[in-house]
Length: 152
Image (tube, rainbow, N blue to C red):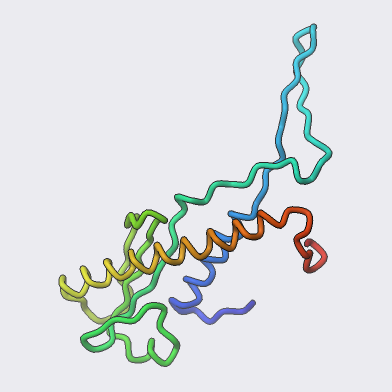
């Protein structure tokens, strides 16, 4: 995929990154010790004998753009052209704000920032729920999952 440098592309990449981490599996490792005290690492031959990474606390980045007296989430390129300033908020699945960055040449008043943060928290929690549902659905398929591409 080729993305133009914009806040929308940044959010897409962030959600894709979290989704990929959520699908990442680490093989179960066992350390065996013989009578002599030497240790040996054993990996299972079963490709499904793995642990999935927990991405529950990995934040998602939500971009909110100020246009006039309102704000929009993940502005299109046309909306970005009218944007005074944007606020990127990093939100966990519990709605905890972990980071914030203002971008753009315009200014934001404190009331607008507060409203944008609250919207970002609400949207961020919804994004987390949707992404987790997709990851859980794929996890439940197990070996029946349709493989796509040569790395499937």
